[in-house]
Image (cartoon, helix red, strand yellow):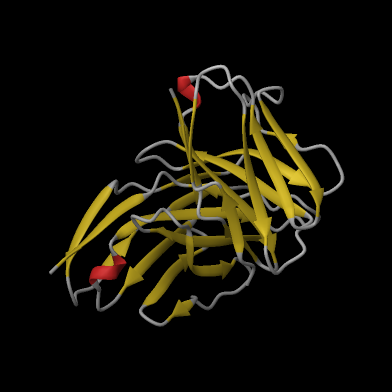
Length: 113
Length: 117
């Protein structure tokens, strides 16, 4: 199966700044990646579907100008949280669609102070 | 739209015993996949088991097995010989068999399973 990494694993940023999270597919060429958000003790909420070489498809209620997604290559997708606010603090998880299932990254904990 | 319901927010089981986690779903699709994912305290999502809706035979992976009832739209997970390492949040998930790039997962709210020594 696909091995997926995320960087950084933890990040703290100040309110109003932007932060970028990388998702890499280490051994699989991923045409489709997904970005999720997970609040404590809750389920995963799909934010957007990222397709290589095209614009991401955002789920209803997700601000595309706030959560910028770029999928410029078959092994890398990035999520940039722009003008971060404390309510953006969360656990962000990416996944890769591989054969027959999604493979998940280890997640990134974002804290906005 | 698909919905996935896990009616047990928390469960506990003694080590070496058997436990069953329930999951029901609602869909008008005929072809789809169902999954159980495990999220231990590390928060890494791990696939436990997968079931294709067109297959009548229930999927099995070592100590993990499912009871897939398509007509009832039920997909329960049985864990046999529970181990301390099975302590985790378990999510049931649905995916349409639509092809293309639309392989989105719909997750249930999860069941927190604690295995006690």
